Amino acid sequence: MAAAQQHRFDPPWNKPMNDGLNFTIKGIDNVPDLYGDITDPQLVVFFAGNQFMVIDELLAAFRKAYPQYTRVFAETLPPGILAKQIESGSITIGNMRISHQPDVYTAGKSRIAAFSDRFSRTETYARNKLALMVPKGNPGNIRGLADLGRKGLRVAMPNPEWEGIGKRIEEAYVKAGGEALKQKIMSEKVADGTTFLTQIHHRQTPMRILYGESEAGPVWYSEAFYQQMIDHPIELVEITDKENIEAVYIAGQLKNAPHPEAARDFMNFLTGAEAKKLYRKYGFTID
Image 1: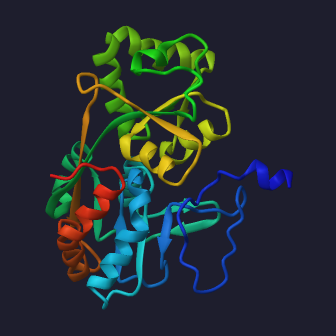
Image 2 (image 1 turned 180 degrees about the vertical axis):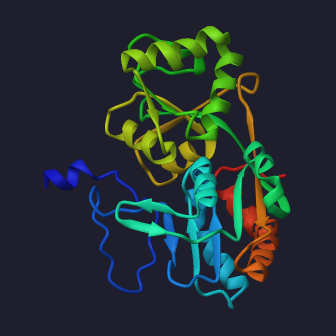
Image 3 (image 1 turned 90 degrees about the vertical axis):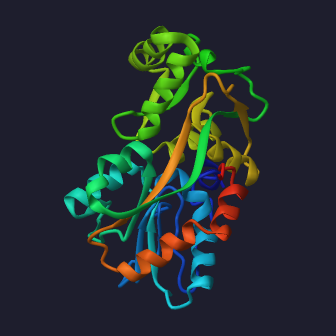
């Protein structure tokens, strides 16, 4: 009973495909950011990790629209990690090495721009903004970004070295309180241990808040929205427009896509009405 309580909020938060043995053990053998068929996939998509909540329905809808693709593999790791995976040719998680190269890679505008010479086609398909994730009841009385500089308040913060959202949040800190607020949260509070820098914020930030390790975390709006959607004891605190920033999500079809026809079909699907409907359902903004 104690072990079950200890890991009660652990991912995966989605419902994995289960047409055979399911051996997901929370806290031990649990790989929530890899999806679908790793053996001989007909399509490989690397999604920026903050979109993990959409993937189940999105891929199911794609397979329904294009029934010829029965084996799809997707990853939802931070876009910077996915970029390094593309450049190095593989990634190792635990004892598993994955050498698949993507047909389609999605990320924010700056990351896509840095990879622009690798793409034969790019398309904008969704947008997002920042919000604050706090425990249910908001015991820290968090009202905005400036509160994250409060002495002693424990903050879960994406590490800008690993995750693009970290740099965007730093921009928002400057909007909210100038360089002084950014310095306080990202230097002073990191030094005293009250700002925890994550490596994969879309998993670590909600888990730290759910397990009482952090009292607030800046995240994409859709991430806090989703935690409420699945009835986790989380609240979403809005950030004012004057302090907020916008993320623009772009999909790129790789010039060397292993499955170019499938890549083209998925790009068309991702920019179509059904995909837009699903992204809107999970808190994203759609043009």
